[in-house]
Figure (cartoon, rainbow, N blue to C red):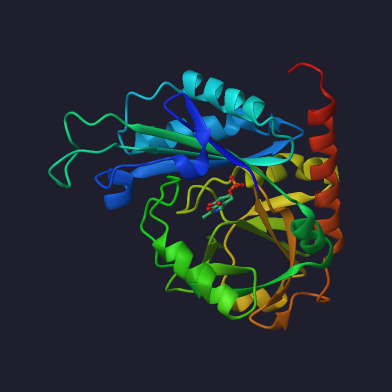
Length: 289
Ligand code: PDD
């Protein structure tokens, strides 16, 4: 798999990138990131991802990053491949400074790292057809999950628990049983023909794919009811699915070993997969790029 990085405008193989041991992203998780899918050489929902990146940077008071220049670098790096089906990863840290101190350093220059790597969608294509199993797991994250920060230990532990159980994802729940989102995906449920999802004002990441699906639900003639689902309610939902940049719309057929609805991907999930695909085709056929 090829991967080409871009560090402050310098294009180089990803494996040759060297980052200081004093970098605050490494030492403190003092950094934010984005993951963008590149289809046919074109970053999808680029504007939305960069707007979210701007919000994340602002939320952690990380200034001095020229996002227009960063976007140019993204395009230069995709062209350098040239990449067709790929994933773009962007990470901005507060930079390196000595001595190690928690408070923001006065002098540090933000590290602007990105890379593009080839992407094979075949495994996901299969999972989108057959669906996946998930586990439920305590949400032990902090209270600013709206920021796409690289503080992902609680997400990593939750996802590992899912993998240990032979599952794809972990649905996270609060102490009162309210489900929030999954370790690296947003989640939706279908009950009595309506589509439900956690409100984005709650402590979740405002997923770009989640936003897209909410906007497309009308096209699929599906009513949306943002609200809360508890762990106990999982037994009574008709359908469940995850969304994410690379997973797109991924049916969930089992939770903690129990079938969701019929135990097969449901009809509304299928319809939303179709409108997602149609929207993507529209993007790819638009000539203005
Ligand atoms: N994960 N919720 C969480 C906690 C996430 O980390 C992600 C994305 C999502 C879905 O967001 P989007 O539709 O914008 O990809 C929801 C990325 C892809 C990752 O960490 O690799």
